[in-house]
Image 1 (cartoon, rainbow, N blue to C red):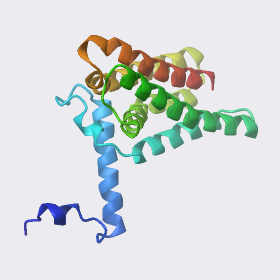
Image 2 (image 1 turned 30 degrees about the horizontal axis):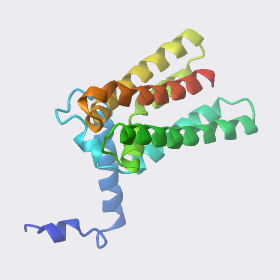
Image 3 (image 1 turned 90 degrees about the vertical axis):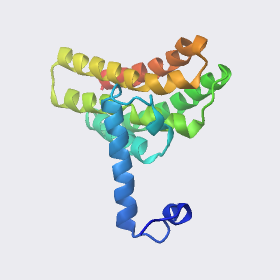
Length: 186
């Protein structure tokens, strides 16, 4: 049977398992886009349909990874909180910067994109936690930093006018550099 537009958007009647599976599929699609940013010809269209589940899970994962490497309980709680504060303040700065450059963006859209694009840094942090070799940790984090920044370029470049793209990308790269630095210091 064919669903009409109003019937298709009604999700209050569906079972919770279907809702969770739909959200998990959406998270997986966005993570694939982040891992293979050159594959998408739409330059970030999928990430513009924002949600906060994926960024929340990735922030939790990164916070737990950094907290596990902390020396004591107090440092672990600071490391965990630092990730959330950095993501929210970084998203605010990136949004304000894009708006000042006459771009069009919403705050939650920025949180979504920056949150999903930290996925390579989460992977790098996980491998850096397993490896206790400093130079290898730096290599993993540098690769994660490059991948994260590269994955967000397509989205951020669409937000600001053509002649101001570098000004729009600069705070994004600083955001990922700050997270990468926190991973290296962990």
